[in-house]
Image (tube, rainbow, N blue to C red; front, side, top):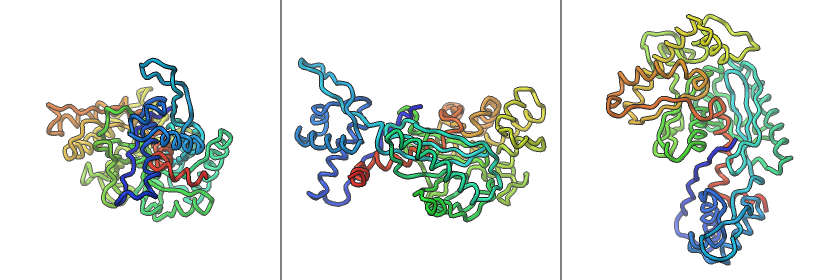
Length: 404
């Protein structure tokens, strides 16, 4: 699977450009041109596009080739007479990013290379609600080591790791994840002590980034809503993820939809999560430990189970109510249903859309699109892996210094 990685914004120079960092800035400019070319680009074309001299382009290209950031591939044709020129494009060897994800039905690990291509994706089914944090993180570390070993054999080097969790994160500490029964869990430190340099971020934000990276350039503003253990939302405006002042935005599951409604694990009442999480939809009809709860819901719905269909109707209504408030404030015209919601979208979309059409002021002349997310349940783990590799895409000199 290839994620059509959107171009990363190059770094802006800090202060005056000095001779000692001009070399790095030129390298980043050339690398960004290769990154955004959409295919092989020749050294001559790079010189024309950047205004740098051909000898400078040659030197930079050799440095990028030696660092396994780019590779020579195919030929380019300028349309003029003369022989075709060798093209330069991103390398599928060298640096890679590792993503980890905790889901309602198991754990996932993913590695992507510099091109955004998924090179390794594993999933271990299990139930992780209210599981001991140390046990879960230990299993994730084991999966991470297996993933690293698998891609090392493909001449890839994992640069860093990003963990997706269903809750707000503060400096690597999971402050609250009611669906997991976690509070103030130092997940980043725990994995770091096990040899994994790990950033920890909210799963809905990472999933939204995954969708942004993997989508085409026509979709740059949307609300991504992720169902599963909890319910999170990632908000993308103008191609940028909105994280909030402290990075804690997106706790969509705790938007109130019925003020005096059902109790929520967070301690409040009437939260969206109490009506639309997988656990709420499953309700009092338990799912065996060996069965994926999302699959159980869809199988029951397809079989015409009255209780499951009623639960999905309630979930879709609550989801539409919560989304309407967000859309009235944000003026966004696209909603992506991800995580568990992507699997249940056949039953959730129409009901949620009906509520949106009734409640969003501008819906009558500016319709809102509600559709399944492109990456489905894998969005968060792919987004985590892409986030890990994006540092190198933005600052290739970081990798080159390490590689040297």
